[in-house]
Image (cartoon, rainbow, N blue to C red; front, top):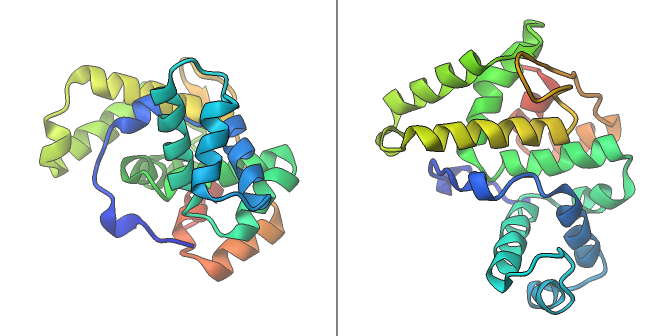
Length: 204
């Protein structure tokens, strides 16, 4: 399992690279079957398993998902396929946390605190507060346009909704406290840095 935090910079590319749950499940299946990266890319392009027209978009989606999956070990990749839907979706979310610093820090600084203190609504103000703080902390983020933050908020909300952590996408969004499979939770805590899964579980 790869720890990618040190090489991660603040980026906004998640705007065009959202949750990709079904696509991640497809590629996980190919990995479990023993296909290598080259063979997986051939499947993606020639068989069009993502059902998209542009070859560049096929490659972009595959590259994004494969990068996320490198943050998981074989046990977790297998669990994406074989677990119940809720657990499978949370593992995919976990892979995004491990490969997107800005999203991880949002989950750590905002979402986790919401669960810890049972303040179970995620508001537009929460996003504004978070992004404004990052503007103050990072020259890179400070240079982004307002539209970038608008799109980031949209994507973050959609990811959390699709992962089952929000009940709705509009207004004051109600947080759904996740139930994580105890075997998966124990595996992650015993084999990796627990802080990534703790932001999902709402634990310190």
